[in-house]
Amino acid sequence: MKKFFKDNLPKPEDLKKYKALGVLGNSIFEKELWSINKHTLSRAIAIGLFWGWMPMFFQMIPAAFCAVYFRANLPLSVAGVWVSNPITMPPMMYLGYEFGNVILGIDPLFDKFEASIDWIIGVFSLIWEPLLVGTMIIGISSAVIGFFGIHLFWKILAYRKLHKIKNNTK
Image (tube, rainbow, N blue to C red; front, side, top):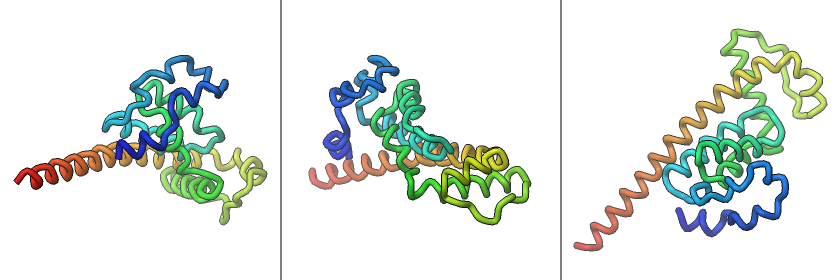
């Protein structure tokens, strides 16, 4: 698993050409932000999943700041927000809106959700509260599940590797 990530993730040198990342300073080139271990990977997955659920544009920017702050793997934190993309974003936001309505005990104002920026901007003042509550709860839940899921997955891989080594020495 480590080899896969090391072979396929960008290197710190690759990011130096992006001037927009200069806002983060030289801290984005610290070794810990590029290492792959149980801790940096689980933090990165949690960050990516959380920000992926947030109803906003440019989710990669706060994900990068969180990666630096929480010492998570930077490229995986940023890539993790891609769980929401132009195809998955409308159903995710609709789910968040509906869930927020349930949590707040509000009857939905709309029977259907239109997957267009114009519609969302037009009704945002009416749907922002249930949308934000729903996506925030789902984002936090996804982050917690992702964090502990990676820890569990890492332990399973370590156990299998240890078991394989143990069986090969007999």
